[in-house]
Amino acid sequence: MRDLGHPLPQGKYPLLTTLLQNGVADLMELAKRHWGYTTRKTACLNACDLCTEIRAFLVRSGYSDSEELRPREFYASKNMALHPEGTSGGHSPS
Image (cartoon, rainbow, N blue to C red; front, side, top):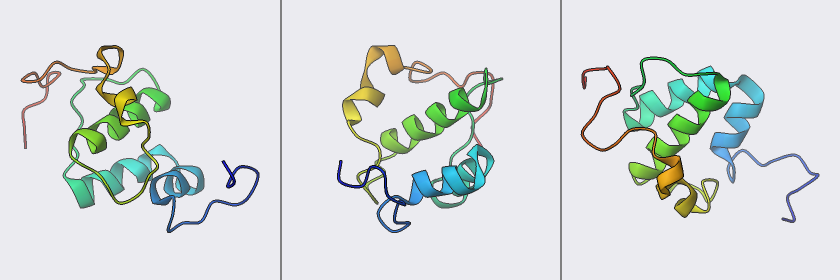
């Protein structure tokens, strides 16, 4: 909470600073390059939908480079399930 109202340090918040400075497309490229992200949906409703999918992927993949994606339970909840395990949302695995 003490970081609220202040510029976010890149080292402490690498995902959020990428998102804020460069948008969801750069967040997606970062996730692809460093963690092997590929979209599991045939289409996203909007940039927020895509960002949520990327963040959920990172949590499922064990992302632990920072504390940004908390609480992890948010991404594990049934309400957050973007795709049941074993489905690809229309995309073949790469």
